[in-house]
Amino acid sequence: MPRVTNCQSCGSSSLRSLYAVAGIPVHSVLLMSTEREALDFPRGDLDLGFCNDCGFVQNVVFDPTPQSYSKEYEETQHFSATFNRFAQGLAQDLV
Image 1: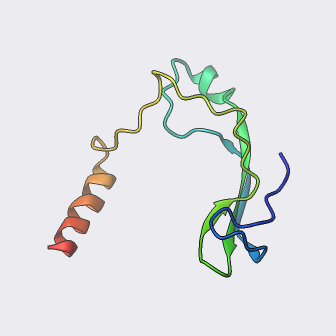
Image 2: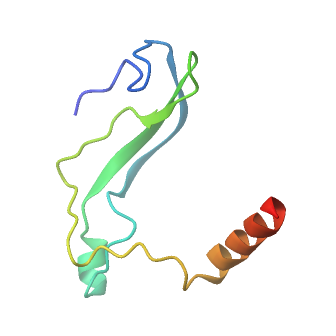
Image 3: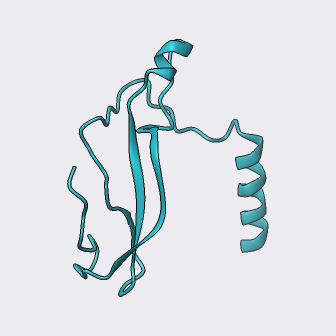
């Protein structure tokens, strides 16, 4: 995929790399049936570009091709003790 050179929010060309990592799984919330399936799962790159004009952050090397939303997609976080602590702390802060 070509690198995005303009902000997808405001159109500015004033993007700078904020954080980059190569070869990460293209999904983080799909359930795999086997360890082998998980290890063989497609990988892609992440390069977060920060727009100096509007503050929008986007993956400037995003490739939609390997995206696969299906019945295996599971984004429920309420079973995570870490997420529950975060949510409770956030609620307390807001109250």
